[in-house]
Length: 547
Image (cartoon, helix red, strand yellow):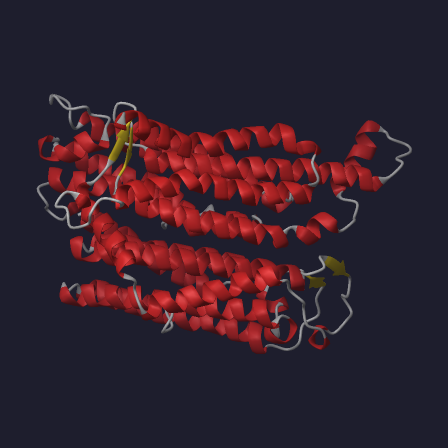
C-alpha cells in the first residue's frame, strides 16, 4: 500500500505538469492570450501541490528520529527517489516558478494588448500574396494566441522535466531529464521571435547539448567504474552506498567529465558562453527561471556525484580541488566581463556566472562549505529572480536594456527602481541582505581552512565586482534624465514618447506588482537578519547528503 502511494505521488508530480503542457499546445491556441497567462499561473500552483505533499510526507516524520536525515521515498523499482537534497531543491523550484508565473501576468500584459503589425504579418502578406486583409488585428491576435499557448505549454513542460531531474535515482534518467529541460527551455528563449533571440536560442541548444554529451560520458564512466561488483551500476543510491568499491581512476575521469559537462549547463566558466545571450534575449520571466533555478539544477546533478567520487578516491581531496578550481575560474572570468558590461540583463547573466562560481567554491571547501553553498544557492536564486523582474520591467519602461539609456530610474518608476536597487545590492553582498550572510560564512570557512590563495582571489574578485556593479547602478539611479517609451503597467498602455522628458512622469503600477516587490524585499531582509530553524534544518539535512 505504501509503495502504491509513493508511486502515485511521485508520478503525479511529474505527469501533471507534463500533460498540462501537452494539452496547452492544442487547447489554448484558440484562447485569448490573457487567459493563457492566467492558466499558466494556475497550472503552476496546481503542479506545486503534489510536490508540497512530498515535502509534507518527508517532514512529517519526527526530526528527533535517528533515521530522519536519511529518510527517502522510493518508487518504480527505485528508479525514482526523493531525499532531503532533492526536496530542498524542489521547494526552491516551487518558489521560483510560482513567483515568475505571477510576474508574467503583468510583464506580458502590455505586449498582448498593444496593437502593431509585426514583421511576421508582413511575411504572411508577401508569401501568401494576400491582397486584402480585412483586419491586421485579427492576424496579430491569432499570432499572440499561438505564442502564449506555446509559452504556457513549454512553461509546464519545463517544470515537468525539472521535476523529473529531482525525482530521478537512475543516473541516466537524470541525464535524460536534464537534456529535456534544454529542449523545452530552448523555445522559451525566442518567445518574442527576432534575429538576436533566434541566434541566442541556437547558441544555447548547441553549447548545452555538447556539454551534456560530455556529461553523459562522465556518467557512463561512473557506471563502468562499478563493473565487477554485484550492485546496480545505474542507481545513485547503489553507487553511493558501495562507492568504496569503485575503480578510482575511472571515477576521477568520470568526475572531470561530469563537472565540465553539467557545468556547461550550470553556467560555470569557461563553458558559460551561451548564458549571456540566452539571459539577455529571453523574456524576463524566462531569464528568472534560467538563473533562479535551471543553473542550480545542473549543479544539483553534480552534487549527486560528489560523495561517490570522494569515497571512491579515498577522500584524497580530488573532487574538492576540481570544484575549487572551476569556482575560481568562474569568479575571475565573470569579474572581467562585469566591469565592462553595458547591457543590464547581460550584466545579471555574468553575475550568475560569478555566483555559480561561489557555489562551486563553497562545495570545493568540503563538508564545512556544503551548508554555506546550499544557503548561497537559495540567496542567489531569490536575489537574482528579483533582479530579473526589475530589469525586465525597467527595460520595458525605457525601451532598452542598455544601461547608458537607463537613467533616473527612481524618478520615473520609484517601485521598480527600488526593486532594482535592493536586488542588486543583495547580489553584491551588501548587509543586511541575504547574500551578505552566506558570503560572510563562506569567508569564515575559507579562513578557518587556511586557504589563503583562495581567500586572496575571492576577496579581490568580490571587491572588483562590488565596485563595478555599484558604478553601473549609480549611473542608472543618478545619471542624466533619460528619454524613453513610457509603459503604464497598471493599464497596460504603451505610448510612444521618444521625444518626451520622462522625468516629469511616474509609472503607475498595479497592486500585484507592489505586493511582489514588497514580498521580495522583506524576504531578502529576513534571511539576511534571521534564519528560521526550519530553513536551517532543511539546509543541514541536505548538506549531509553531499558530504
